[in-house]
Structure formats: C-alpha cells, structure tokens
Image 1 (tube, rainbow, N blue to C red):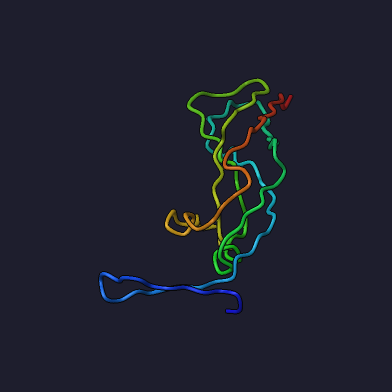
Image 2: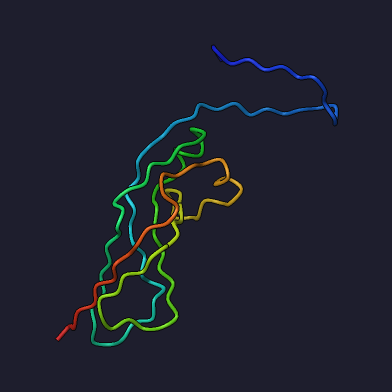
Length: 125
C-alpha cells in the first residue's frame, strides 16, 4: 500500500502474519431493545435512545459486516412508569442478526460505548 512502511528488528517466533485492511468509518442508527425487561399486563412499552447514532471505525471487512446497533436494556424488575436507564451498553449485530464477536469488536472503535434509554410506559386502556 502506498505510504505504508514497516521494519522488523527481531522476530520470535520465526513467522509473522500481517492482515492489512483499509480503515473506514460509518454512522449507524442505535435502536433500543427492551425485550428483556419484565412487563406488566395492561401497559404498552416504547423506548427512545439518548444518542440517535454511533460512528464506528475499523477495518473495512468488519465495519461492512455491521448491520445494526442496539442498546439492550436488561432490568430485573417491572417498569410501570416512564423510566430512564443510564449506561446501557451497545451491542453490534451483522445483517443476519447475529452478535458481532468480542474478538472482532476489539478492532472496532465507537464514538459512544453506552447510552441512556428512556422507557415510555402507557396504559393500554
């Protein structure tokens, strides 16, 4: 690649494998996932995310794999009034809905790692 140079002074073990990729960035919308929260019958639940999107950067082959980003709320108790949940971590998914592995995520940087999610609760009556 033009403009890339490397030098090796000592190698142990004797072999070295390099994987050179183009580094790219893209912006992906963050969706709230509240499917894990305990719900109460008679209420309707919706959610909104404090940050609308996240900018991700990394190797093109990994960034192009990411199809969606979700803020997954995991609460242990039922919610019956509008509630804000802070520091909800983001999960990254491929186009088929599979979670991107931690081994791949270590090469990706994100503009935010957690967001706040507001869970809106309304009576369905």
